[in-house]
Image (cartoon, rainbow, N blue to C red; front, side):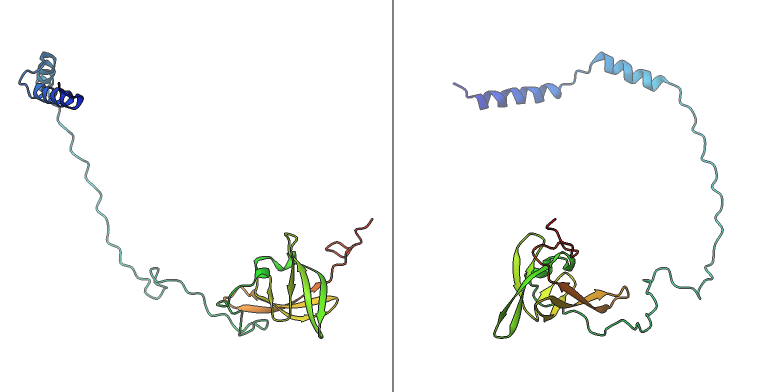
Amino acid sequence: MLRVGGIVVILFVQAMLYGCSTHVDDDVVEFVQEIKSRKTQAIEPLPPFPHAENFKYKATDLRDPFEPFSAPKAEANPGYQAGGPDLNRAREPLEAFPLDSLLMVGTLEREGDFFALIKDNTGIVHTAQIGNYVGQNSGKIQKINDSMIEVREWLPNGKGGFKEHLTILPLIKANEDVNGHDSSN
């Protein structure tokens, strides 16, 4: 008994042999003869192309368009600080949030050292001390007392450098909103 695979092979071989037969359908022969009997038409020649004039580039005293453009060097900026943030240091958790979204909600004091309680925009309260970084512009905590946090940020100056900027985060009391208004009413 032949298996199904054997039957498929036999049918395939028969189909291939049928395709190799010399018999040609009469319709095909008629169509080819009709095409060959048609009169051919002459193809018009292509129109002549206008001659392009040579152009000599004479702007040698201008900037080379294939060289990268470099802006002129900026003059000394009075608000510019030569340093800038340390971009290679490890980031701290409070640097994931914009500085204006962080709220000082309290302080802790231990042996004369103040620790700030800072609430992020997800509602989590973090502790921070002088030297910690906050905000997305490499803001470093400079001073903490019972009513505010002083932060030194490095803001881009638009000329490839950085500008130092001091920001104060005031203490937000329990019955105040972010703008200092009484929210108990």
